[in-house]
Amino acid sequence: MPRDSSQQIPELQALTPAEQEFVQEYAQADPATLLLQQHRYRGLAIPKLVHYIQARQKVKHKLPLWYQCLDIVYPPTLSLEQSSSELTAQYKAGLVTGKVLIDLTGGFGIDSFFFAQNFAQVHYVEQNPELTAIAAYNARLLGNTNIQFHNDSAAEYLQAFTGQVDWIYLDPARRSTANQKLHFLSDCEPDVLELLSLLFQKTEQVLLKTSPMLDIEQARQQLSKVSKIIVVAVENECKEVLYLLNEKAPPEPDLEAVNLYAQKEPTIFRFSKSGEEAASITYSEPLPYIYEPNTAILKAGGFKSVAQQYKLNKLHRNSHLYTSENLILDFPGRIFKCLAVSKYQKKEILNYLPEKKANITVRNFPEPVAAIRKKLELQEGGSVYLLATTDIHQKPIILVCEKAL
Image 1 (spheres, rainbow, N blue to C red):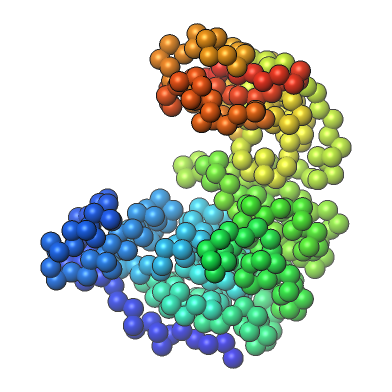
Image 2 (image 1 turned 90 degrees about the vertical axis):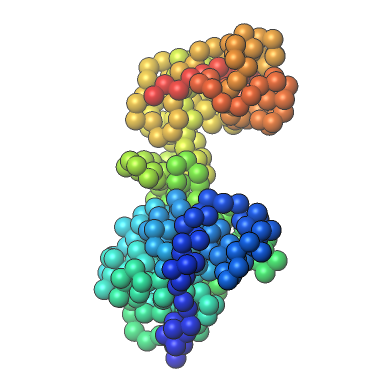
């Protein structure tokens, strides 16, 4: 039977009032400096408190609910780095509903915490006993009462579990024991490909989270029962790819590119692989407005679909920059007003940059940002954006732009 971690919870202790006072006073301090000066703070376990300060610095924006509570217990740094953010966990929780969900890769417990708001019961499963105890302690601290915690491996727990559930969620570990990033499903732990048959004995619906480094098409083919693929970005930084698996999945899954924001509604772009392949688009010289799709669209591969849906011209087959005569306000990405088109020549470009300062982006260009900045002797920042790309004549060009919105 699955092992329960409840006997481990009493071993976890929150910070003492003196320790909490220290953490608050040095919340923004340099951890390395605190360690070097630990002799100044007699009576305090400085290495423990430095870890706590480092953890809070990492979660301040990622997990604000956890950050605000000084009684929270934090796991080792790697577990924090691999955990979902509140934004992405809330988004995933909005995709699934039902009575019972199993989270087979519980970790720090962030996803389980938010799933529990949409389910009568959540089974958190984690093979690391320390993580299991920490997640259970924190959930109780934050008032969550409908998560059952199990210290077990995914495969052993499933084999012992009887009955059916509405959803099973997996977020396989994406690093090897040598702390190297892994890019294939079979390299992750647990191996979801080996578990597929067992998963579908317990549920009809599976939500799988993978690294954005994973090849989407290869994963789709290996998983085979994919009804939808969602690429999730936060503030234009690609964070994860979600695969919704179903025994009755259609031959072709839906594709979505979602960009989440802390202070506004998400942008969602939908397309299909067959639609992308069949899309007919046009190319042109740069026009008054230039568009750069958000990273979720680029990762999802909606290069032609975004041009077709928003009636834009593409600058080059491989550039993934788009242009139009008139402003398209609802475009899902950055929008620029093109001030000039320049050759990649220092003298010509500096005519547009009296302050010798610019933000530089590269799309299909022979040199990286650092080399361009060095050649042009430019500082970073300012209101001018240089988009280094290749035009329809295969020539490298620099688009001198400013934000349109």
